[in-house]
Figure 1 (cartoon, each protein chain N blue to C red):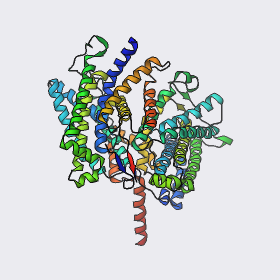
Figure 2: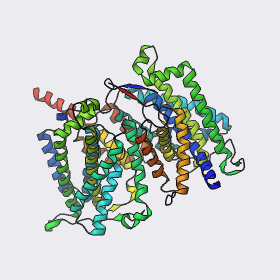
Figure 3: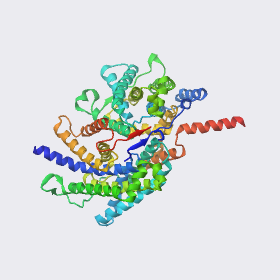
Length: 338
Length: 292
């Protein structure tokens, strides 16, 4: 029943992350990159598949991170955009025989449009209301995909089967390995673009909205435009991730894109550290591997184990992987001094 | 016309479920300013506790009262142990905490009582109410209990010292602390009351949707929707929102061609988004004035 709310003294919903703290240094980036390039050469096909999924979910978490960590808006509806991207890719590949690589930009553009449009009504909502509106979107999506008159294109409840592409130019790579390197290339491209976006004038505008909307608009930032753009960009990247996901899993069906996926992506972002882009991959690892580990510890109680682990993360390292990275950095600096 | 009247009546019957849950949602929102995603699971757990007591031979109303008391204590315990340390953390961390709590409660209930669907008794009987086939005495009883709860809450918040203190602690915590209100315990009390109301909602809903660990999934979403529609700051709004969502959902299913059972949920959600865009504070909520 609060009729008035102090805006200036009120803590922002998302903690301010300075621009520089959003990325890794060059040295660390190169090490991570080398690990990502070399590991698949030494592991089994199934692990390569899991690493592909790691990158794909990493992209989706990154997209959410741009929206929440960048512009301070919540979304529990990323699974909807992921689904739109996946279906765009699947329909183009299976009904129109479009090359898989060409479907991804289309998925991105379609989702950018969807996100931009959804961003319009979302402009009027903030905080918990926005979370709820996006939550509603995620809940409605599987139902919409099952609609009768779309069944010719979407395959209804059964979904669509997607063919896995072979390596081009006669490269001696297995399908899994080729797809992994393809995904890696796309991910690196998007990561670099995202980092640059947040470092640019637009990125600064987004962060000013996140930190104090009223001050931002007073300084001449077009709040409405940038907020919807953030939604669009985030949805676009999620859509590309969805498209890649459809190719990797070789299958799309409405029940693959439920609210559980949206919640997983959200958990991934919190675990990775809100506003820390490299954390996206850590968050992605958490949502892919921790449920498996939990099931390994106790089959009946896997949900409880997952919950306890999540509680441990938010108690011990409330800023997620970013905090761990900072602590590691400080330790390294201390060791150097000695 | 008769079809219309019948559908409205059936809508009110389902709306009572949503209204019950929405009350619990508003209660916790009043206390902590967050939507508790684990609320439905907590209610489900309470319902299972009462079911277990009845299995041990405790009469219905004793089990009912005991469960409400235990849930109240449980809610306070959860707040003290798990969420008090997060009080200063950003909203996102809190939401992650709710998700974790959701996973834990759901999985523990599944382990103790397994996932088979169970019958749950009703104290009101299930014969047709006043000769109408669409609404049973149980559903009429639910509407009654919801309205009673609402009246009780209204009395509590408007006319008791502790209700006033809770309102103060929720709206301006710092000023409330300055006049000597223990805001930290007010939050715990809010959790306890929300858990107790959730338990009542769960025990009323269980005869309709049957008892199983996932029974609250759909109901909670409608509960959120109703609370938002009516305005998160108003218990009365939440109850009216619940009935509105129930009626609208039924009418849309009957009169709009192409809307089967499958599309009821998206339609209800679209309604909510529309209302939010036009009236961001909900139908009965007080708009928040921003002061720079």
